[in-house]
Amino acid sequence: MDFYEEDMSPFPGFMRRPPVGMSTRGFDEYFRCYPIAMLQGPYREMADHGGKIFLPPSSLDKLTRLHITYPMLFELINQREEQRTHAGVLEFIAEEGKVYIPQWLMERLSLDVGDLLQIKSTDLPPGRFIKLQPQSSAFLDITDPRAVLENAFRNFSCLTKGDIFTFSYNDQEYKVAVLETKPDNDKHAIVTMETDLEVDFAPPVGYEEPKRTSGTSTPRSGVGGGNLPHNVPLHYQGTMAQSINYASIAPSSNTAAAGAKAVSSNFLSGGQKLSTKKGSKAPTPNPSTPVAGSSSNEKPPPPRRNINGPQPLRLPPGKLFFGYEVKPVRTRNENGESIPEQETKVTFQGQGQTLRGRPKKDGGGGSGT
Image (cartoon, rainbow, N blue to C red; front, side):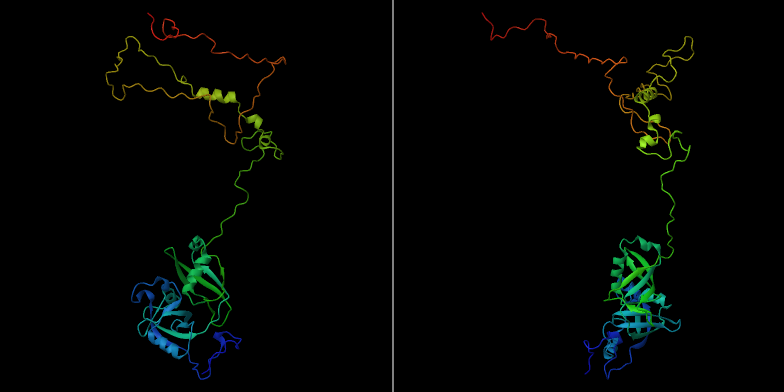
């Protein structure tokens, strides 16, 4: 019996000739094709999003007699539409005369349920490079597409140029087209398992590059534009306060306090009299007499605003506030003389007083007789 000489042959297994005496006729059969969803038993979602088919048990016997070993690769041919692609085999549990293939393969070969499909055994080289194109921009929402594809490729044995396979991720189905495969051959197909495969991506179908706008989002100030003073230089050096001439627009603490006091004043409206004129026909309602549309309870006075604390800023648009002006403590008067410090007022120097009218008695034990 002859064997392959693994150590002596410089060619990979798919290029070696069969031993002497072995039949060179490969597996070539016709089957009625059906989608995997129609296979008996529970729905096999992973198989339906893969690249492997289900054949009957008799096909395994024939493949064994033909000495076709792992990986078993097949060429699927629809002679009526002149479409062909490649796939592997997952199990041999189909009914005799039937083959169950993924839905995307039926669409790839333009097959209907029950059509005749020719299946031939073949050999393909291990892939080194593949270029893919997602068919929807939703593919960009995947956080790590390379890791997701590596997991999806476990359900594939081979891929052919022109295939549009599917995979499921987070309960969503994605379609990906095969644009290019290397090494290129007459079948334009490669083996995707047990190989170091380099993957490249083309832009998804319908994807548009975001338009880039020139400049930054910060509005630019032009000459005489905005609410800045006219003496602000266009090209300046120093701090921001110097560049916007902060001294000319900074509000003083007294001005802000006066504005807040005016706003918080309770006497901005007109005065009202507490009593009506004599001879008026409209009597003054008593508090105990209910009046329609009014309440007998007195309205609480409006809350008074604190004018000593921080006040709200009311600056015109385009102006910035960097704090109040600093007023140093005056140590000299207008004549240049130093101002003496105020003498410290001494407190709590008065004599103690009692609430009782008579003075305290000196501490003695009991009453004397």
